[in-house]
Image (cartoon, rainbow, N blue to C red):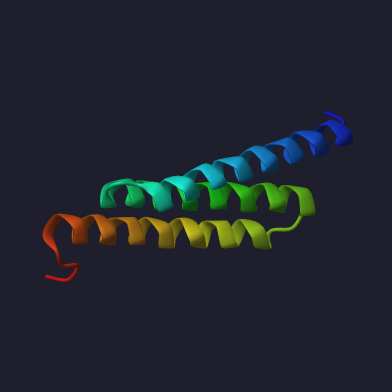
Length: 93
């Protein structure tokens, strides 16, 4: 695969991921229920993670991959805490 083809495919992926981030932001703002908002936050951190991975591929550095891993871990814990709060009304028992 040539370098120019790789550059353009990463650029297109970044644009599409940015569009996906805007769509999830709209669902976060408009979402009629709290469950819709939690799902949009879940999708938003996954898209942010993927954007950081594409930035790391483009910049050829590993710091973006480490930050993406950290966002993935914190996003998962946040989603579990929000889901537990919506089901029971409390996070810590």
